[in-house]
Amino acid sequence: MYKRFRRLRTNKTIRDLVCETKLSKDDFVYPLFVKEGRFDKIEVASMPGVYQMDIETIVKECGELIAIGIKAILLFGIPEKKDNIGSECMGEYSLISRTIRAIKQKYPEFYIITDLCFCEYTSHGHCGVLDDKTGQVNNDKTLENSLTQALVHLKAGANMIAPSGMMDGIIATLRNGMDKHGYSHIPIMSYSTKFASAFYGPFRDVAQSAPDKGDRKTYQMDVANRAEALEESLEDEAQGADILMVKPALSFLDIIRDIKNNTNLPIAAYNVSGEYAMLKLAGKHGLIDYDKVMYEKLLSMKRAGASIIITYHAKEICEMLN
Ligand code: PBG
Image (cartoon, rainbow, N blue to C red):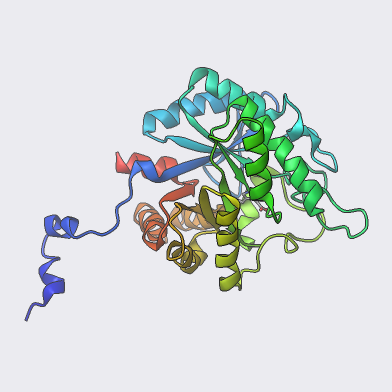
């Protein structure tokens, strides 16, 4: 005896009609890594298909992304020189600001989100200024510097700021500062629930941002904490975040759903480097059907409650959706 379930599965038309979640090219943000110098692009061993690019190559890449139907990028910088406070990213002619200007000159409508952090720019690899006494990241000094960095990005033409350093009070600091400086129209996507995860390994190779000593557990969240994850995102909403983010995504789908059930803000899922690399490698060895698993993985993030997916798969999935 057929019950309702199998009656609605008999062919593709009816399955499509009752399908609850669909991926669209509008859902994706593609991370890009600009590196100082003239060298075209360098592939990073731990992340096949992901490159460090020079400014000229990034601009060309943006043309290709637009042709595929990708509408937004998340930009990271790899400077030539690092120091203990990460000064490079706070100067008007920083690598990121020159990159934004170069992209905007050619593609003024292309949507540029900038990752706001210090780990790529500091010689010690931590996400802010270290406190002389404790050796830990000094929260309030880092807040001050974060606003300086944000204003550099905005002056160059960034469309959205995405602070990822996990400092307390970062959203209120940026919102107030940006409003004061004439950027009240610019949204903030908060890395509101960002865990101290082991899934960031390959990213740190690409971004050259691994901490030289210790880990990020004094500022990023404990992967075990579900209640705190919700609290941090709701705190960022209260401070004025426009979009909340959960990172990583795949092992944290429960967290995405918790937040979705407690906010009306859009939620972004960051499908991070380790998640990407695992799938790439399994695909390369023929252990899985790469395209189908990629689709299923990204779909699960949307089904969990994310409407924005930041992923290194963005080109592949958008080509598939064409
Ligand atoms: C910077 C930052 C990291 C990632 C995004 N922004 C690394 C980290 O926190 O160590 C990770 C992204 C990825 O793994 O794909 N703080």
